[in-house]
Structures are given as structure tokens and as C-alpha cells.
Length: 232
Ligand SMILES: [Zn+2]
Image 1 (cartoon, rainbow, N blue to C red):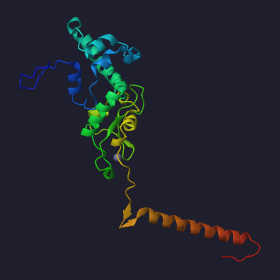
Image 2 (cartoon, rainbow, N blue to C red):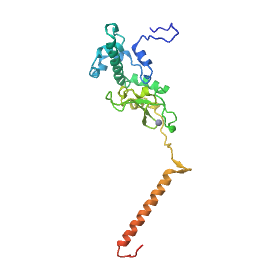
Image 3 (cartoon, protein in one colour):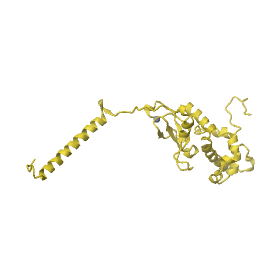
Image 4 (spheres, rainbow, N blue to C red):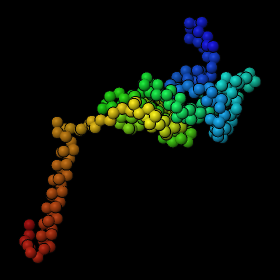
């Protein structure tokens, strides 16, 4: 299997998936089971998404591509197709029971970062797509505590296609593994000026404005009324 005899950083990784997952910026992806990839039923329709070098890309992902038979330019294109194909398969795999467990493990480790909202107390996030259509929107991070989404901090992560994770992942994960759903708190930040709640001041201003308006309208009505024809 893998060569562990050399102590130095290996410049050569035997498996394409290991290489792909090791690329800086690919930390959000989990490892897809090879048997999942090899089951053609799971890949139905993906050949329409990867129009060029689909089969070669699939061979590359599963380490079956004879790279020597392609020139540099073709290899580059196959690699590009392979990365895209991996993302598309990933979107399907992560919502299977095995895929959900794999993403849950990453979530538990905090691989997707933590919620930037102070009152969420460093809640671990999960990746989510805003659409399942590839090459439309980049990935966002979902916080199960405040139920809001955030942009990834790193530029590399922020450029990843959201469709590689899909719109359902976090919600399916908590449906299948509800124990990991954080408790909701009603704790909210209250804006204050010198200790006074800002909205209380605002309410007071609104009440004053309303009272003033009603007073003016009242005066106008009084002027029109025949009962009290006095001027204000
Ligand atoms: Zn949050």
C-alpha cells in the first residue's frame, strides 16, 4: 500500500484521491469510497456534466488512467475534468449514510471553521450550496445554531463550487444525526447607548412622533369641525 518508509514529505502520492484531498484549499472535501465511485449507477447523468474526457477523468480518479498515452495538454484537461467530476460525485456521496458520517466527523473536528457570530460560541459549521446547479454559486458555511450562512474566510475555500456539497447536506445530516444539532438559545445581542437599549429609545421617539402627528391631525380636525371652531 502506501509507502511509509521515507521520512521526508512525499512528493509522490500513490492515489489520486489522496493527492486531491491533500491540495491546499480542498479541506472541505471528504474521501469518497472507491466502491461508490465504481458503481456506475451512482454516476448516472454525470457524463452530461463533464462533457470532455469523462471516462478518462473517471479513470484518473480511480487510478486507472494510463497517463503516458496522453500529452501534457490533454493530461491537464483530464485533471481539470477529474477535479470537477470528483466534486459532482462528492455532492451525491455526502448525502448517503456513509458520506454523512464522514462529513459529521469533519464537522466534529471543526474542519469547516467556526461561526463568526459571537453569541454562537464558536459553533462548528458545515458547508452548504445555495444551488445544486454546478458552476453557479460558491460554497457557503451553515451555522446550525444561528441558522445563518457565512462566506468562508479563506480565498481558496471561498472559490469552491457550492454544488459540490449541495443544498441539503447540513439539514440531512442533522435529520439523521439529531444528537449533533446544537441547542438553540434565545440569546440576542441588544444594542445599547450608554446602557439604554437603543430600540427603547427608538420606540420612545416613534411614540413621540406619533403623538405629535395625532395632535396635529386632531387640531386640523378640530378646525374643520363645527363644534369647536376656535383657532389653535
Ligand atoms: Zn452561528
